[in-house]
Length: 413
Image 1 (cartoon, rainbow, N blue to C red):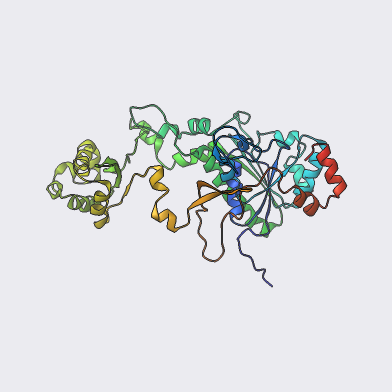
Image 2 (cartoon, rainbow, N blue to C red):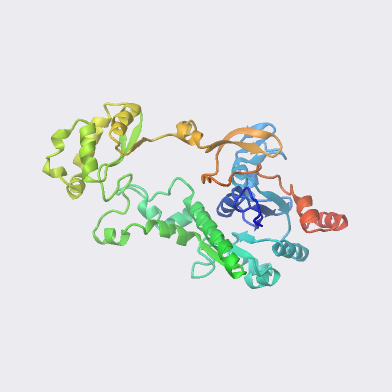
């Protein structure tokens, strides 16, 4: 008899030892798809992001004067749908209890510096003896092997060393980081893929898996979709700003009241674009005959676009181009994005909730994968520190009330 479920990962238990961004973002996706995510935090301290400004709480959003009820907004965003317990992993008793958790888990996730789990006495070989089916995923700056293994890393350093900065910015400008924290976020999504693959293979093999995610590896894999080594050999700048090295016009252009992004790739699209902007006189211009010609004369092509775009508001330009099916979109600022009707229609703009005081007035992104048979969402606000201690220690692990109180007294939990 098949079991009825409402979410894809229902019945999967995840022990989450992570902090900051990469790990919490990964485990949040698992929670949205139905996994029970138990976030293990340091007693009395918790994830460092709990005290990062700005905060939200019963008295609203603030940048200073944090109260005991206030939780950082980024913590509230990154830990939706999870449970929180406290546990001191640096104590012998703490590791004993951690082992009990592992025995009842499907996935273990950590983003400590390489070697930390070994220092706790719970490397993969030990974990397998506790639970042969455990899927153990580690995220670190440079992975568990290699000459950079022990180097500390954050998003900025990873964007620098993976090549993201080598392709971000303008040809005559300095290297720039991508505005989104992709140094952390991309490894999170690769880690998610690895965990889902391991869960599937476990159904066939009956045993778990060790997953080693390097932030540098993941970000490097993004940029090498392009033939960057060939561009360098040909003396072509790898930093192209908003341009596409294979097509023009392909950039952002000024309007009367903002900016518009326009993408024209094929010769047929170029013909349609010229008709849309009333420049059929350029159709037979030998400088613009094909893609190669247009690339050679990119400044002239872009001048034609700017001459046209500056005559119109962004909305007027969009109407003209969209009527001809020319790929284009407005360059939106944050205030505009939060009012975007498309995002609203798909439930992507949600109000962030506080576990005590409810609505914060702050916006957060919904879960971006839409399933048609089962559901996916964030089932609860981010938890208070240790909010689920009794549920997990007394309920799941069946510790006695006396043991529980002793653990609190000894600051193990």
